[in-house]
Image (cartoon, rainbow, N blue to C red):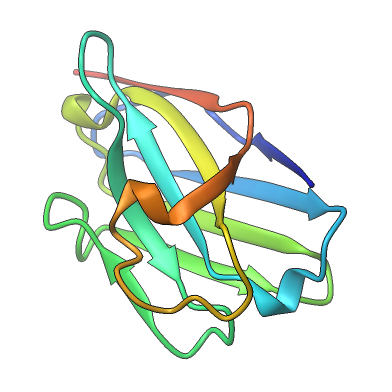
Length: 126
């Protein structure tokens, strides 16, 4: 299993970025996926998740309405569109895959995830 995230960078407050995560080594369409982030000195926290069949998405309160998670099963890719970025969104962002096929509940729970990408840094300047 491999997850490779990219798309991070430096952006001004109010701007946007699109993160993508390309997966390989497993049947992509059968697994729910999530994005988490970790700011300096803080614990890793849930950002967004999408069910294996794409019919439901979930967001942390802090990003709801600004971020959108999506998946393209044909390209084995999960993306995170981030709009109206704030300085407090600054963090390393990680994509992750749940441990088992068709897991669909409690996707905000970090313990659900067994595989992680390497992270991509997002810096939002004020």
